Amino acid sequence: MEKLIGRKQEIAELTRCLHSPRSEFAVIYGRRRVGKTFLVTQTFKNQFALVFTGSHKAPKQRQLQLFGKALQAYGHIPYPIQPDNWYHAFDALEKMLESWPQAGKKILFFDEMPWIDTPHSEFVVALEDFWNTWAALRDDIFLIASGSATSWMVNHLVENQGGLHNRITSSIYLRPFTLGECEEYLRQHDCAWDRYTITQCYMYLGGIPFYYSLMDYKADLANNIDLLFFRPNAILKNEFNDLYNVLFSGAAKYQEIVRLLARKREGMTRNELAKELGTDGGGLSLRIENLENCDFVTCYLQFGNKKKGTIIRLTDFFTLFYLKFIEGQEKQSSAYWRNKMREPSVVAWQGLCFELVGMMHIEQIKRHLGITGMLTHTSSWRSKHNEAQIDLVIDRADRCIHLCEMKFSVSPFIIDKDYEMRLRERMALFTEETQTRKTLLTTFVTSFGVKPSIHSGIVQSEVTMDDLFYE
Image 1 (spheres, rainbow, N blue to C red):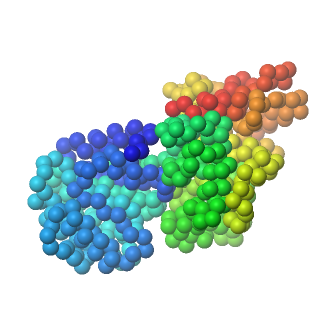
Image 2 (cartoon, rainbow, N blue to C red):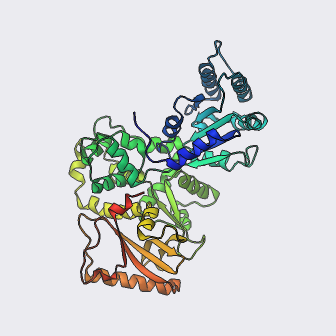
């Protein structure tokens, strides 16, 4: 049986809720396939008083029918339970729990809760009534709500302005694995890939545990990509459409946004997106917010600005990889990626993608730089006329600023005379436009470090690929 990788803080919080002296209402949300269900089921194993999973696109009556079956099974009730609405369903749940034979917290796990809330079902208001008038008045109920439709989880539970306002006692946002956690997962399955290969895999699939669970750990990376995408009946062949259609109503509009962002490596402002899409208004803002909540895009503040000019970047590795290399190639030979991955276009794309890997591991970068305990602000910077851009700027409380340059290569990175001059010109432009008087530190994040030379003196600090793996 697989063991949990990482998730120490999340497990500690769930354990705290279990042993607290009051009833608890915990919400667990995060991107689809990130391991929410696995976290809950592995933490509590067979301790549940009820587990109910919403059924995708099932109508209200079917959801109620399945809920009745779950009540009957977990409550060992000899007769069928057939609630006709959610108020009656929760009444039946209360009756079952009041006669529960075991002492201690009764754990109720509602998985994929957004799917339960079908149109006009009144599920949320019935849930509010159950919690406020019964469960919260006791000290032995532990309700866990989980769902991949993060926007629904945030709007209806975490930031609920109705009957559940301030009723959520614990909110757990489950992020994708880091590089270090991916390495731990692969080692658990006796995978012998080196860190360079694991980093490449991360560029393709991100830190989504489900994708790693599908691999043949004895095969190499190229063979696994062919297995997942290009072999007959490849399991991830339709993942892109399935992923967006499950998470978003009107998935085509969300896909239009990510397709546009995929072509703009440097990211786009909201105004630039609106212009390209030919649309504006609250609908676009809501979609951007929903994409960010589901870990598909990240909004980066520009250096020196609190809100204005926020850069929106596509940061879901799977989506980036799919749109760049998979879409339209599904009918290629079953050895397509083995022949493709060494082409210059793939090598160049990996170089660009490594910048994103670094930006997803800012805490590891700060730890290696020795500034974990220091107040810092991270941002991006784009010059006024787009002559230069710095993807990662770390502004320190001690009046130093790291200008981070990220490079992926098969050997130590070489800085030549021309590149040194470009770096110096960029620093000068940054100083001129931001009017900063702080000390600027050129920081390189590379796969194997910077090769010492007469031009490498411009580098004040280095972070290597190995450093990104440490938690």
